Image (spheres, rainbow, N blue to C red):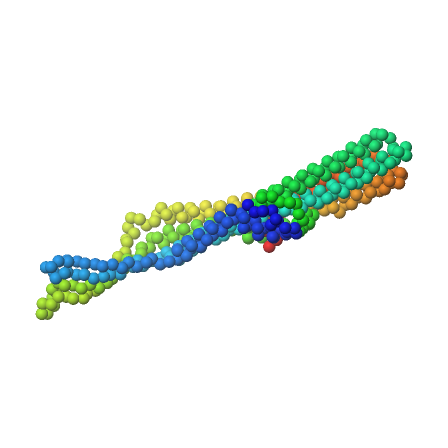
Length: 399
């Protein structure tokens, strides 16, 4: 694992993504699989090697050594089999690349969720610190008013309890922030990490367009790409089964010295002569009937798998989109309407209380309302970024 000092301040999501891909064994395995597929594609496009050898017939003293020579033998591939094998290997390569992209998106989705949860946890802690300071100030004012005879003991107790409650919530917020940093460090394969500044704002939820995003997912998501690649591979399997019915040619030719006497004037040996053989397999019994049937079924299966994948993606997208839309609407409502109103009411009641023109129970009620709305706001932010992260696992939004 890597020491903590490599997590410097001001890190962006892109910085962490690059580090994550370097450290992730899943992504590195996927990259190795791509290299393996590239090697197989190269191998699939190579032509068969020729065979070189020696030949001899009737080798004896009686035949003056018989016939001795050499030959070259070559298999001539027919039916476009090499091109089909190259295309099939190309589909395997596309499948490996899509799987690698799928791992990148999954890791990016996890990182996005943890990154913005960490940002939100830090902002939540900051908000709770301000609220705790306000609660402590209200308790201090309450004690001063008690000395002036303006407040009763129960109000003082309530103010102290509310201040302690705010301090406890602040400590809980700090623990949540430390846990978020620890989870981020674990994902990045770092031993430990000290909370530092991240470059971003948790409340900056992206504004997405449903139809545009779904169109991109259908066209570019790794799962859809893999389904389409499986269909193309099945089509190549069918072409390979059909091409296998076309037999290859076996061609053999050479030269040899024939020491035997032949029908040569003067009774001389035959001497140098050429030889050749040409053979072809007759598809009499095996005409690839079984392979053709299996390949046709494979094409249909791949077509149905593509439909199933799109339906599953559509259902998943619909659920995640609903969560994203609800969370974003909640965040906007809290940020633009509810929180400003609650903060204004709390400040008015608190200022009136400081000026001894208001009742403490009203301050307490406004303070609790503001506290609760702050927490609900950060919960909505967390849910929104989780939905965005899940959408990123379908398709990387920032590209």
